[in-house]
Length: 84
Figure 1: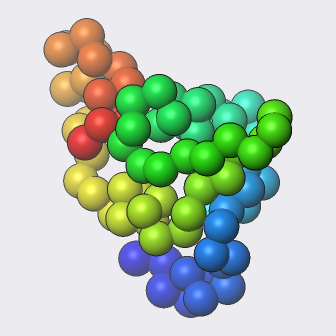
Figure 2: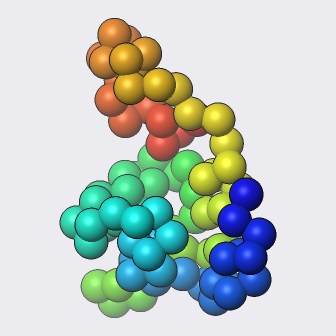
């Protein structure tokens, strides 16, 4: 999926790395990581007040098929995409 970028990513990602990879805001990156920590969709490790995410489980989650926005809204499951 992101083959060239995969090689350039560190083995352990910080929220800033996730932000850069997803091209989203810092707040959205923290939101995704916090929800993943609660739901367990990919491994998240807390180091003090910081989050760390192993690269391979994160990229595996990222490559998984997701439901469309309209499907999630119809079902009332706006965050279900994290678990899929």
